[in-house]
Length: 400
Image 1 (cartoon, rainbow, N blue to C red):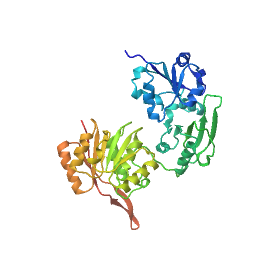
Image 2: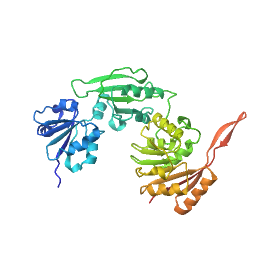
Image 3: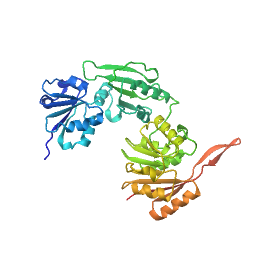
Image 4: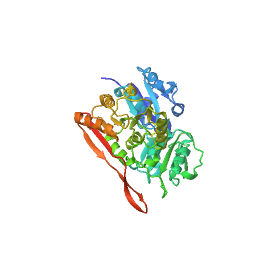
């Protein structure tokens, strides 16, 4: 049986005093301690060798592996497995070789300071990540706890809120929680002007104005929210398309012929940590997709130049595939071969030629074939009538 040799210890602003007796004994007995400067300053130990986080940070695993056979401790902030480096280490080193020592997380401390129930709060991190990814969580009456990436982050988030009609939202920055230097800064988004410490946690109570932008995370955002040259999957068809693709936590979508990125963006918004790769040959459309992803809170949308099958060489295998452009039997066969088991494939067709391809593929592979037709009420002279959009033939199936 593998014996644990690595201890990952969560620590708070109260340093050694906040550790349980057992965890404190582990730290005091360590031969080598690895952590950031802030962590080392919180832990007194005259005997242990001290190692700072390596640079680049990706070298961390190699550094830790080199400690095997010694009494090694890695210091992290709060809970090592809640938006912390402990999870990254656990993916590279067998968890049976690790003992985790959790401390109260910043989320727990912040929720206690705010009097908020954690199950009713969205917990997010933008630490070392694009701040724009929190935009997808701006909803009326939502409460957010955000691990920030620096002293500028609260002002950036205040800007996002104000631009979307949530300027009255209440913001609280909490710093050095649990220590002698704990600080709190309160304000509202539209007038936020505090200078705050670099290491902080932000609490946001979203308050919507009557004209606030409503951007739910279920698919079907308004077409006007996307930059487009007109060749996008429209709102109602997009909602049906994403529903058939079945977004799931951490799942990967290939959006083939992604255009302005509307389907990929809706997929990523619909499930936590869902990822997407948009494959698009036109540079202008990739630029629109990138701008849309940033504005709608999915800055991690990956965009690839080219067409299928050439463009998919080396890409991670997807859990779902949408073919919105460049449909052909060759495109389908390459995509289908790459799709994971239980993967979902959806293809939409507007032209008769593309519809004929879908009908033939449906005959060979099964699945569901439907025709979607949307009519919109529009002025007709002084009255109102129904104006039809082009019908869309949609084929969907699951890989068994």
